[in-house]
Image 1 (tube, rainbow, N blue to C red):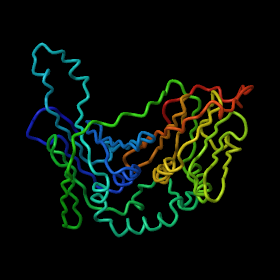
Image 2: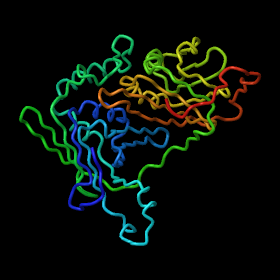
Image 3: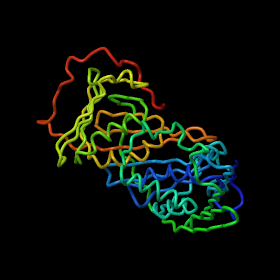
Image 4: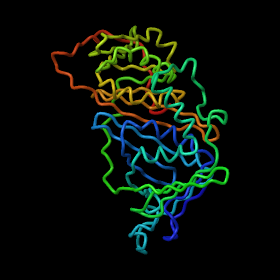
Length: 346
């Protein structure tokens, strides 16, 4: 794997992967939208998506997912100036940005595995929350699980050009040139990592199974309560045609790898936005939940990929506005537990 800044005739990006399965699964976690923003850098490819400013998601194709990964960025204008500061130039992060159709890219990546993908999708449509307990695999991308063989070559020749994907298997080669759009990147949902109310790390399957318990009531809203006292975490649905449902993590300290709460945190979200992250929960091994004092929920999921280490999916959710008359100050008098300093990563 290498990167350089030299030949203007070489493509901005050229990468080769031995399987499309990890690429497909990581990207499918953002299928709550139809258009994604792409940032190509020396470290990999970053995909970001936004859903009406109430939900955002980020997926990374780390360069370790590829057997070969090469970038060629043009020289910045000031680099031609003999008096420019070479140290500042070296510190600059070179990025090529564009937008692309997500459904078109997903369809391209699973061309050779279309039959298997259709079968898996049919099962998902019947039970989109199928439990991780029986069907969970600690490594969703093991050789036994992949199912998509052959090679995948990706290239991006120049700004404004197509995003090209070449798939080859058993002598059959398919080339797809996907149209790119030059547009402004969506603004990140404001989230203050320096002012967190809580941080929890647990297995992703526990959260998926909790949502599976709630989903049958077809709720409109999901209220999340995090406290130092039992129940440590409570998920409550509301607005469903079949009533309400509540899931308590009463034995939270046994289920959580990390449990740190500075103050009681309660926020209500649109259920469908949380539901949109269940695809990521199915392939992840761990999930980190963090909430800041303005009510934004951050969900970071760790996905283990055989031979490529850990990859991460990141989501942010904006809560419903809370009126002062509806707020309950039930956190008074809580003290003691959960005083450890909160980490920023797994």
